[in-house]
Image 1 (spheres, one colour):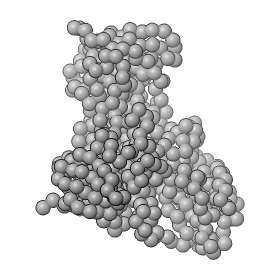
Image 2: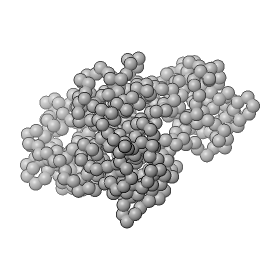
Image 3: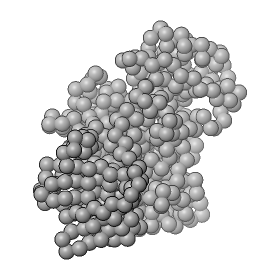
Image 4: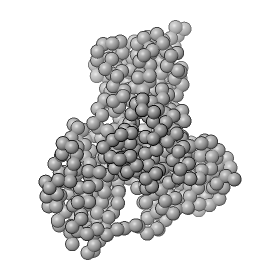
Amino acid sequence: MKPHPPGSYPVVVVGSGPGGVQVAYWLRRMGIGYAHLSADERPGGMFQRFPVYQRLISWTKPYALEERGTEAYERYDWNSLIAEEPEHRALVAGLMDGSSYFPARSEMEAGIVSFVQKTSLPLRYGCRLTGTRRDDGDIVLETSEGDYKCRIAIFAIGATQPWKPAIPGFEDVPHYVEARPAREYAGKRVVIIGKRNSGFELADGLLPWARQILLASPRPATLSVTERSLVGARARYAQPYEDHVLAGGNVVLDVAIERVERGDGGYRVHARGTTHGGNLVLDADEVIAATGFQAPFSVLSGCEVATFNQGRLPAQTPYWESPSAPNIFFAGSITQGFGGLKKYGIPGNSAAVHGFRYNAGVMCRYIARERLGMPADDQEIAPAAVVDNLLRWVTKAPELWHQPSYLCRVIERRGASLVLGGCEPLAAFVDAPGDDAVAITIENNGKGDLYPAVYVRRDGRVTEHVLDPAPFHDFETPEHRAQLGTLVRPLLP
């Protein structure tokens, strides 16, 4: 018998990719009643089909500086879903065959399936969302199996629909999702339009086969790994760029595409230089549009969800709620719709599993506390332990390393007591009023320098401070204790 039949629930989650599965885990862990729906017949989401050429861009180190299965190990495992129970952690690492520390698509999918099975998470598969509406303050999800009414709806639907810009001739250009097996491009000249992750993924997959690859987009490729942002290509995709630098045949072009013409013998791409001016004509046997995806918003039209980025992403608050449609939240890769403070221009890592898996727990705790009226699980901390805890977190806490300047750990002063405030969005801590408190996170200045950033809130005013960097990222030193102790001393009872 299928779980979660149509009816009324406090929360309904839509989507069985890693974002939806991670949210469902935390909801059940917190004792929140929910229904979990998926149009697919099994978990995995987009990892059932993508990446096209099978190898992920995010890495997992099966053997690392921390023991596998511990919370600290998550810092070296960018792909597994997270859990409180050690036996449910680091599942992707245990499925990898050792040929690369970038998991294969099949290994990633198997990791999600294994997490669902081991945690016994119930899902209602084959239940397709067809529309949404409001009903006397509640949200109604219209599905192929009936209506679901809820107070809170969480959409982990991903950016799953191919998107192409409105450029003349693009209707004749295959999208990334339509790329054929790499061998079929053997000996051909291929133009890939787009120089972000999917563009470099295609180039990497075609590198042994294509006669020449031209990567084209208006902005220069961002190859920095130290920025730890999915805005830039990962290290695995540096090989096509290296071939370009060595004049091996590949060419990386900064051009705006003006139109594409298709003829009997292939394609002609008309472009205009951006970094360097001038018009170019690119003749190619094949053209592929690696121009990205958008979320499927048509099913949310009944709830007036605001979007941005040419309608590709939902607008979101720091807790990943729609500002135009209260009680509609988002999970998974579309939580990139809230970019955080973007210090030094660096957004969060919320487009990827290693970022949004932490967003999920923060969001569920917020929903429990602020929308469902559940008591917060506050724990007092002794004044003498404040500095040690903050430095331990900034040295070990994986969510701070994966979401630098985006998520933070907080200690609040409430009357004569100090309370562990948990993990919170840094933007919410900085912008929202609250009790006197201290928050700590990792900061990256875009030049490869990593160091703790401390935010102290007193009398409603927040001040920012940075601690010294450390060559081995160990901040539990006497020098750091002295620095931090001076900053937090005014908050201590």
